[in-house]
Length: 469
Image 1 (cartoon, one colour):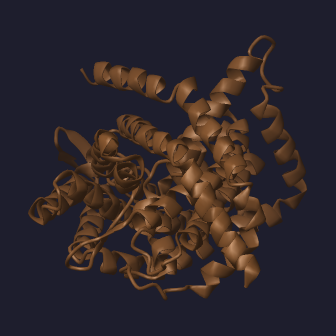
Image 2 (cartoon, rainbow, N blue to C red):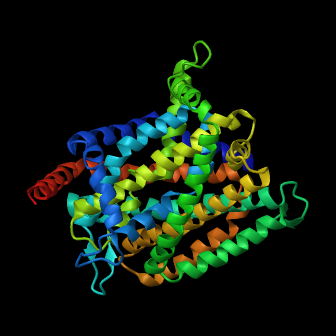
Image 3 (cartoon, rainbow, N blue to C red):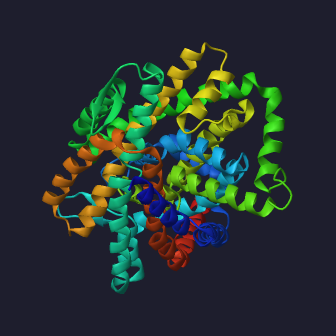
């Protein structure tokens, strides 16, 4: 029965993440890059300055511009940066990392456009709290006749949070990492739900569920406050650790880049298999890249809409840095450590691949390397759980026309999903996450193309005013 379910899920996943959607994501990224005149390249320096400026001078909003970015990063920097990259490289070869870069470079324009539009079309409720995101720029930007598309987006948004990125994949990654470190041989076990689990899995699941519950019940401001503290800390810890691996193996870096590029274009595939190798590398790289940075998915705009900034373009510039930080920095470092050490080709899977890369690459005892990775993954996944609760709550709020009682019940259902997450099978979890990912992206990509003219006009107006100052 389980094999049949896995087979069905696999077929759906292959269809959703087939060539058409991959092409659509890339084409929309190219289209927006051209329409916005390469804003992700020309205004990169300005975007960096805005992050450190941490502006919160807007008349409306619930959190600072920096807090909005941290909230978005809390949802994007997760297991996708550690487990997802490893999964992509094992399945699609080192070339998958190259296609992650391409998706990220184009996705930065996509992230800018969606977050800018979310600010432009956000709604201030009577009690002062902010609601914004794809569902509102579809409804208010494209017109009431397109509201059915906004409801589809919101429905899949709840699904991604509750059944995909937000709960199962993250808590699964946490419990697996803790188990691999403290009880790799599964010496201390107990029986639950007809299967045997290590005590470390159960304890980790209970601890994370408790912490998640304490934060989630406090709402957006508590989530953003936790994100502002944890996100910078966890990012620096992981980046520094991965950089040490790269620096200690600096002589292998040129060869790693050659291997990545050659693999991306099927140059290392057997005769006649080059095309298949390219497609596989593209599929795995782009799918995991989107899973990681969520550009085009429509999630980050939900957080961006709450920023205390009046200029939509300004928040768009800040938010687009999320893709740069997440994929072009964090995922790249993960991928390089895996390729440099050859951990991707050792018959390992998931977090074990990145763990092995850190053990081989860091000039520390294996136990220390494993601990660093475990702590990084726990923090990454924990903040992603918090961020995606906020996203899915806002989607549900839209679906129920602001019925906060339903949202309150949903919080407890979300916490329950975190609780049972460690006991879900890994393959099924990732497949379900991929499916909801792709389905959520479709209505958002349609809206971004439809509203690209407005995005271009707003961007030009802002930049012209900036130059005139």
